[in-house]
Length: 195
Image (cartoon, rainbow, N blue to C red):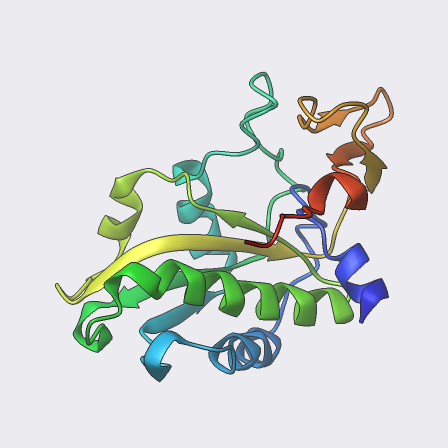
């Protein structure tokens, strides 16, 4: 488990021609649905997308890598070969409005861990053009909240320790390696005095 967690990074460049089957996407969504949910409300629904035509329509509506302002996202050939759209079903909220994002975090982490076990990389994308939803006939009770880009990774992600607590920006080296600084375990631990 520790090895899979360490390998489950955010990937933004993929082998676009390596298609992901509908069965594979269904297996990943099955892992998402099994995650814990506040009051067991299970408000999230998912739409798998793996046709090149629809993937091409989704891609221009996405924003990529906020810390890399000169990079507009993966080039043709390195784009995701599949997406999973995460849709909030407002009819299933039942008083859990304030907790749905926690549920989505649990669900998508399950999904991405399962993807990495299959050597599939992913990227959660919350920055997208609101017009993306207009590609679909969307009932009023559904709200598009997150897009997960998926594909066979075509980049190396290197985890390294932060040089200082304020330097958390990821960056790319001259060979295209994607470096992600992580705070040390010690800096994440807190020892509070007990009253």
